[in-house]
Length: 414
Image (tube, rainbow, N blue to C red; front, side, top):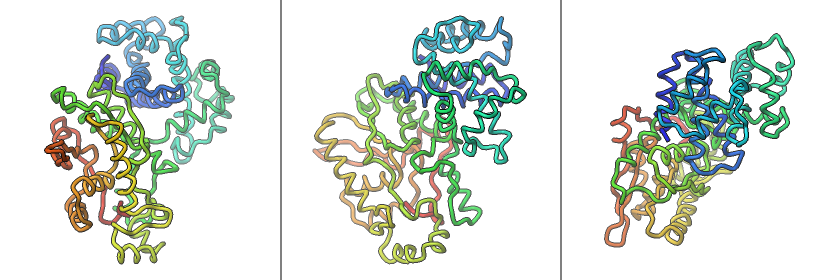
């Protein structure tokens, strides 16, 4: 099965229209969401569903008629090594191909394709032009307006909801949630900093729902291929992830690109980012203006011990990570484990594993940000774990993936 990176290259080879590429990317996200809804948990399987969405119309630009679209694409897909399951699912989304939709994968691509395009059209006529601001009821109303988005075949929209066994409003709501903008929280934080704002404008309702950005996907794929290039004896045998959406997606891409056969993703809430509570989405300037008592308390106690209302101190994070490490020792002894987590969590792991003091870990934190998708690794030596890499970004640079990190100084620190 070709990788997601190879699928993206295939899409770009045959599709030059930015609109059609974006449509493929949007259907890919929708298909991943439906994979999880159907109970798919294996990262490789979720990736397969996403690839079906990404490539469903890859040949349309060059073959826009019923006589050629998908007929040509089917031949190309088979020549490029795509398995029958993927080829048949892609071809099944068009009624004229007369392929029975007898699997969840086929039902989902049929349900997603036309409606995803229609939702995008509805968003474009909103004042903000953002799917995040699009009510499902507005989509339902537009569906009844035959003059709106005439090219969308309504029978596919209604038939798709029926195929997945969901009321249409529920189906529409589900896809809107899946298609919320893919701008990473880091971008929003950076923008707030540059503009001198008090609050960080993040599209998702919760930080844990902020999706992985396209750049983040490229970074994750680079790390996955780096892992694949390593000798078999050092490749991971277990992958655990924070429950945050962007972390889970990073882990899924890593497993798929590294081709870690038989490795399933395990989500562990103890790997989540440090919770900021009342300080969440506030810049440092915002904290000083809106919560001056907390700004003063943090300055007095220091970030290591300060616990914001409803949030966690670094000590709180360290406590849950100690229980996580105890679990690893009991349940995954002898395994090679990858933990996909967040910057503050990485530093707290170092504090525990290297038996540091508050001053030592804060000095490391002050030196540089932990880069996104950087590698921090340990190897066992003389019965103890010894640091091998910290903030290792060579795999990103080797593949031309831009190295990024969360902006720190003027922003509520993790």
